[in-house]
Amino acid sequence: MDQRKAPVYEALQEFRRNRVVPFDVPGHKRGRGNPELVSLLGKQCVELDVNSMKPLDNLCHPISVIKEAEELAAEAFGAAHAFLMVGGTTSAVQTMVLTACKSGEKIILPRNVHRSVINALVVNGATPIYVNPDTDNRLGIALGMKISQVERAIEENPEAKAILVNNPTYYGICSNLKKIVEIAHEHGMMVLVDEAHGTHFYFGENMPVTAMAAGADMSSVSMHKSGGSLTQSSFLLTGPNVSAGYVRQVINLTQTTSASYLLISSLDISRRNLALRGRELFAEVMRIADYARTEINKIGGYYAYGKELINGDSVYDFDPTKLTVYTLDIGLAGIEVYDLLRDEYDIQLELGDMGNVLAYISIGDRMREVERLVSALVDVKRRYSKDRSGLFDHEYINPSVVMTPQEAFYAPKEEMIPIRETNGRICTEFVMCYPPGIPILAPGERITQEIIDYILYAKEKGCQLTGPEDEKVERLNVIKESTTY
Image (cartoon, rainbow, N blue to C red; front, side, top):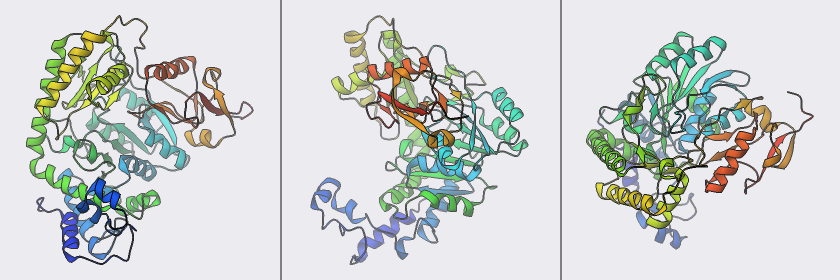
């Protein structure tokens, strides 16, 4: 196919030239009814905020320009089929889970998944079989899935329908995806890959293996992260053994019937951009990231880690574009460095956790911004470094799972119990730092004193805690003590 084409974008351009009179939604009527919106977003943008119509196709049942855009994307990503997703990668991840399993069936997955995975289990009632990943003792971050861990989970749960893999993790850690696919398929299980942070793997050189190249059945790809499309736009990719028609039905269970053409066209244009120029774009991204790692490690006290973490198993490969920096050796939690950079230096990072910060390097970055970041980190160390005693030194706590997420979420509960009084109780809701959105607690897990201490410490350090009904995250909902389980 001709990857120079962008069929949705081209159809929108034709639509603008035709000056169609709108007696349909949206009600702002090309911006005429909302001048402040036009002032904010621009006339051309608002004029293209339109509804589905014959010349522009329909995302729920594409037969023309959207269908062609999906075919072009499938070819570009090496997939049997690609679906344009406008509900974020959350929607794509949930579609994978809802496609692969149903109520009462088992799915094998690492516990350090994004909340969207567990949300899907709340909806469909499947039972998670968690593989608790190893943790890097220095960095405090969860690693990938070991082959031995996957084999053990399959041996103990041969009836499981699927295995879900984070590849890469937020921190750039990759598992041995080809081997996991091989083992899973030998046992008749689907392989689902949360590839939210791996768009660039498909277009750069010397990158870790992609889900589609490894033979995975489904993959969710955040095109808006490293691929350059608008926020909330993603791709869902499927392999040749997955029914595209059934996947479309699952998508349509939850996806909007009023899809944004701004999001759809941004996927179309961004796919074209990467298909034509991705190799050179991501070569520059890797050059910038490598330079930044080198310069930050020269400062002393910080550790910007890279491929030296590879051990052939729990860290089978590493994403070379990831710029994650360990900060505890200068006596500051990652979230503290994150806040200082934002408040004192006007530098917005992607993530600050207990021990690390993540600067997301992608196709829009330039060397001058990296120089500014490096200089700011030098200054932060000079002005704010201190003794590291008393700092929390790990990011991931293995949970004790008592009930399925669906059982716990809908079970009779005692509401708004002070967090300090919940030790030993079973949680009915989520608690997580966002980003990265990996639950500290999920429905059905037993609350421990270690988890309580972690939540209170994260609050004290300024992490953005989300999930519970209590917006101040001072109280939790727990299972009623009389509930049997």
